[in-house]
Length: 381
Image (cartoon, rainbow, N blue to C red):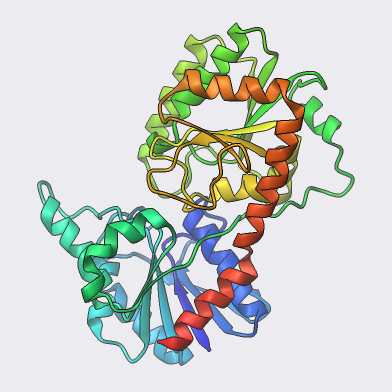
């Protein structure tokens, strides 16, 4: 098939949707499909094998579909797959109406979340209608997690082609050549007897950055020699609200006296991110809305076989097994998180068990598997 992936962000932009699109495009190309990425004009066009990146969209405003559909005709694409996250398109709703142009191509929408775009003040019901219209007019809809599948299920009679296909890790466990775990830890002033906590991903309200810092403070109060490595970029390229939240977390770090125990790697290439993850003892992911397979940060920790402490899921996730592949605590509960981390500091056997369970769970989310599921869905349509 000739497949076009439409995305509002793409590397070197910092963002999960861009990273997802890059991984999916490469994997679709690797299994034999002609794959094209259509995105913004910020960088020059590049190629990877049979994957081409077309940076043609100056703005995602009204009329953007004309350029999209003209390029789709020029490339003779069979499927257009819109990677939808409102923030990636600058909160503008124009992309929501691509299926309504009735192109000569299948239009499939992958919802990375169900957040609504901005229209104008007090436009709440209309904003929800815009997202619902995108789902109803598309030839097929992909959701990436159980939570969104449940939210959109009330539309299922109007969306006959709805499927759940998960995301995977954007960071393979592939550190730089000659990687040495002890040397990596020493870069951050962490010794062999210290407990290094890891956090990967941007800071925003839903990810519980404040609870993370409170957890670290509680561990230090208990006499545990804990440090925290914040791995990767802080705020991303698409959502400006992340910056304000990151500043709140910075202020909390200072007020708790944790400046010398919180280390920031900054935005880094995948192999450097991998090196940081492998250096940690426990990854702490205090999602306020519960652990979810829509989180690329979770998948990265699983793929690296880390012992994970996180929060109970909002919906039942059979693959998530407390004390088998992660430890689960209530959201917004630093005391509970600190108890779980302290338990892993003392119980090396449990930590090893969680690491084994994480690797086993990660095997269910390989990119080849995701690409084959996606291509099969396109083929059925």
